[in-house]
Image 1 (cartoon, one colour):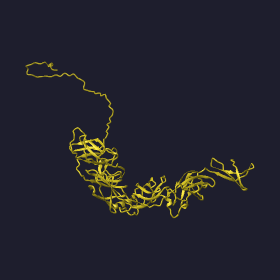
Image 2 (cartoon, rainbow, N blue to C red; image 1 turned 60 degrees about the vertical axis):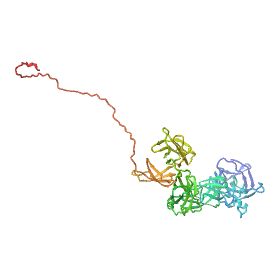
Image 3 (cartoon, rainbow, N blue to C red; image 1 turned 120 degrees about the vertical axis):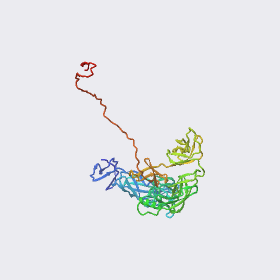
Image 4 (cartoon, rainbow, N blue to C red; image 1 turned 60 degrees about the horizontal axis):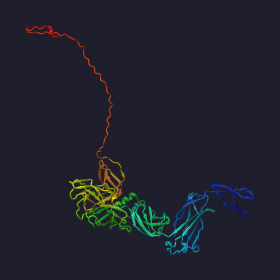
Length: 580
């Protein structure tokens, strides 16, 4: 019932502009001429207008496009109404003049309808800027200044109607120059510094290791980004080298000269010696067979070549006390040696020794290296390490000096001072409670001194080390016989490879076997008698007072006259009635 003005094209054709129609509907189209409406069998369908939300990728490389389509996301796409994609490549002039800019219009292509919220515009290789420049020398593709402002104008239309226009920038080709470190464990999570050229600060920035995208990409500058390695466990076992590529638009990955090696979790077989002074050379060897077995447990199949320290991607280091990183000398494919750095405390003490295959980025625990003392210390700490959260009971033993009567000694951990919680004059020790490391700016170790007088402290700075907080994630099995002996696998961590490693079942403490930083095992102890507090309640019937009746019975009283007769010698005469 809506009329619009038609335009006579020829004797057989009239063109009309469709009116606005608020709903989806199919209507009959007729011709009205001289006030007379002609009979019509033609119909026209009104459909909702497509709405464009976003497109991907949002940029394109200037050369070597591998993207096969530009995805258009939105709503109200209709398979009955074909959509066409129009492309116009524009390279601005150096003087920003419209006359000198270069423009190339391409033939429209029909979009591929996938569903009512997605259509795809096919992309051809000729959508690059290559035909604007030299085909032989492709250095122009990396020139950010030369390509500044280069765009692809993409318009969407139906056969007659315009829908949407979008500007897609061309970006100079990104290039990978170097990686650091160049290897990492298959478990993933290692942060890799990638240096190169033409990296773009975009949400779409992607980093790919082989066929797997990095878990996280952080833009630092146009010449540096940080990529977090993905998990690589499902690609067999052993060492595996992959290519590292970067894509500013998350789709078109650059050709790369960067290669990276994934390796299995390192398992230490032996380390010796673990006691000595500075510059003591420590030999560390890997358990190659255990590494192969563990890898095959996770991923059966034919393993790749096993990891070895002679790999051009490896850069082995020894790490002392989490902070001192020293070079490791490769002595064989599966062993290295390193020299202990100077000890920070003249009284010696134990520090955690760790091994890394990738410059100290990822480490495995080797054990504790104990420095011998270079001068006599008047006391020692037992234990000399504890939880970061504090609360460890520490005994300062062998203190020289006299206890002051009625004065509780003071304990100083770094800059934090507190009173001792106990003393034993006979055995000569002071008991202290370690504070959390947060009171000392989260230091990994602190110096400890004692004051017996409550005023003057010792000046020997005995080292106390803070351990990582340990948690238990799961047990397997979680139950066993009361007689003990069940091999319990404990997962959690981080666990240290130390002779001090223990498991506690209730109040029973047993030795633990170290497997890796996330896995230990213990044999369950015999279940001791469990002491329980029993609550006993005694109940009785309520008291019911009774009235007792006692009856006593006897024979009726009978008066009797008893006659007694006596006999004498006749000197006294008694009457018979004197007795009765």
